[in-house]
Image (cartoon, rainbow, N blue to C red):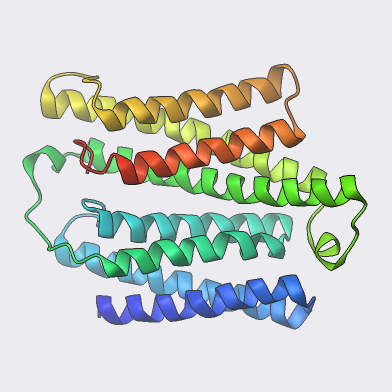
Amino acid sequence: MTHMFFILTVALYCCAAAAYLACLVRTSSLLTRWAGRILAVGFTAHLLSTIHLAVNMKYLPLTNMQESLSFFSLAVVGGFIFFERKYKVTTLGSFIIPVALLMLTASSTLHEQSRQLPPILQSNWFWFHALLAFASYACFTIAAGVAVMYLIQRYFLKTKHFGALFQKLPSLETMDDISYRCLTVGWPLLTVAIISGSIWSDQAMGSYWIWDRKQTWSLIIWIIYAALLHGRITIGWRGKRAAILSIIGFIVVLFTFFGMKHSIVW
C-alpha cells in the first residue's frame, strides 16, 4: 500500500507541476483551481504513504536519505499549500512544486534497505529535532523560491520589460512579505531544532555539542538566517540584498542536507 500511495503521489505531483508551469504561459482560473486540487490530492496521498510507512516501521521515516528526501518534499508541499492559500500566489507553485517533485523523484531512485533503529536514534528528542528541522528547511525553500521570483520581477521593472510573465508574478511588496513570513517562522523553528538536537546529543553521546559536521553547518545556517532577520528588523534589509542572502542560505541548507548525510544525525 505504501508503494501504491507513493506512485500515486509522484503521478499527481507531476500533473500539478505541469499545471503550475502552464500557469506561467496562460492565465486561467480553471487551470489555477485544478492545479491546486491536484496538488492537494497528491499531498494527501504523500501524507498517507508516509503515515503507512511509519506505522509499518514503528518510527518516523527520517533515518536515511531516501526517507528524508521524501519527507523534505512533503514538508515543502505542505508549506507551499499554506502560503498559496494565504497569499493567493499561484505562480509560486511554478518555482516550488518542480523542486518538491525533483526531491521525491530522487528519493525513488535510492534503494536503502529498512534497518533496525539504532540505539542512538531511539530518543523522542531526535524525532522532535528532525521534525522541526524539516519544517524550517521547508520555510527556507519557499523563501528561496520567492527570492528568485523577486529578482526576476525586479529585473523586469528595472528594464521596463512588462511582458506576460511580469503580469503573472506577484508584486514586489507581496513577495517581500512572504519571504519575511517564511523567515520569521523558519528561523525560530531552526533555533528550537538545534536546541533539541543538542539535548538529544547529550543523551546519546554525553555532550551537548561535539562539533559534528552537521551540527557545525546547521549553526552556519542559523547564523545566515539570523543575520538576515536581524538586518531586516534593525536596518531595514529588503529587496535585492535580502533575496540574494535568502538564496545563499538555501544553497547552504542543500549542502548541509546532502553533503553532511554521513554525520551522526542521519
